[in-house]
Length: 603
Image (tube, rainbow, N blue to C red; front, side, top):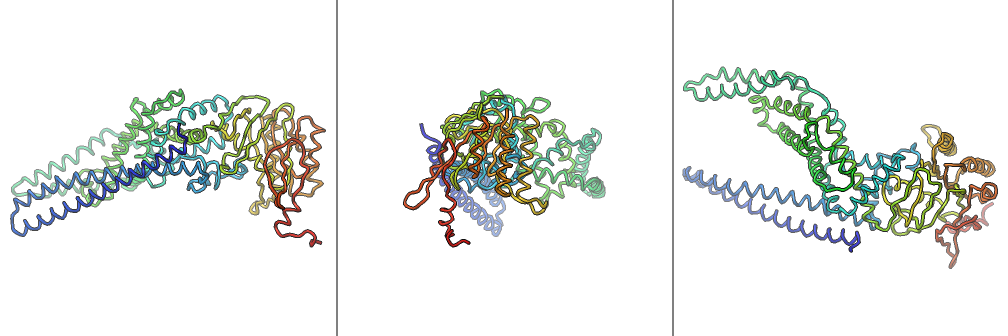
């Protein structure tokens, strides 16, 4: 069986070949089309010059018979090439993800960064080099926000997480379906809009355009005007007064409520590309063959109040919006006066809203949820050796085997870890650069993956469902006049408050109280760690203060682990392997010398 990288490479080569052939075909059709146009125009000019108008008619008919199919086929192959290019990009991105080159992906999720979130800043969940950038394949606004929700606010129900795990396990091997679903969103190069205004419009009601008498009048008037126009044309001595009067009345009617009507029609036009994408994505999701109850339930939601499929209803909206796009043509202004097209379009939109408007938000949310779950499924497919976590509501232990950081693809070092009962707080000591902070982030980011419903970077992973809190990358805030030390106190206060409120908490503290003197830092750390080492609380604390290692003898709920370095050929090396006990080495002086700072010269 081929691994994920082999499959992606094979697919990428396939689509490169398809694109090459389609480019050759489009170029050939384009050249033939140009030749037909030149021949048709040349013969047409010749027949006009010779006064052979009967032959000119034949020339025009033959030209149209040949030219129109060529235009249609040219457009067809251009569209096919767009899809092939989307599939190529999907597989090239998948290879980059496997090879650790995903930091080049444009969507970093920076708009989701929140310094007040309990853990996302410290664990690199959003932003450059983040978990979101690594795993996101969602393109729609709803899909990106749903993935953000799964990573930042996953919920605490084991049942919900288990449902997502089941879905991810089902979607992972459906590579063709997932890539087709994604390609429909990627084939449109423009960034998709926030659909909030579209949803608000879909849930609004325009009484004017639902009034049956007014609808009858707006439909009747163009018929009357057309009849007057035909009568005027056929009259041996035409009188244009009636036709001018009829058109004048319709022109005045168009002026009534023009601005709000134009605003609504422009809104629909603004979402034209998005609506077409929604239609195709709904079609693929509705046609999907799933065994998961939850996915089947999502498919069942894709109907309007009359039981009509969402795909079919969005397609109707797309057709209306296509007509609206013609408002930018010069000819539209003339036809609008003759047939009250703006009113016809508004009536069609209101009729669509009456049937399906209230369902639109649910349909778009369904697309977004499918995109987010597909992103999780990508991680499952790419890493079949990663474990699907075993979760419980109140299991006393966290036990992991062979755990590594999922974002470190080339230099990953894995460790085993177990703590819970009686030891539920681990104090991690070690010298600079030995791996303490990375271990904390490794545990935290794998918990985030676990609660989202994804696989984790480990051989086995067992844990309860906990509220994650971190205090690691603390910075000062000049605008709020907050020092880094006070900002750290605010983060710690958040953790203590959650514990006091009875939440099941998992905390990560990196070099706590580093912004104050060593005596206060040591005293404060001892008090805080002892306070947090209680039932229903788990955590890791990294520190340079080796004195904190003594807490293990004072409190049975605390256990010491450490990292160490070794020296070879006058160079410092780290193996990043976690060991029991307190660190016995220091390397700060050595690192200073490596940086060119000679301690002997310091006063």
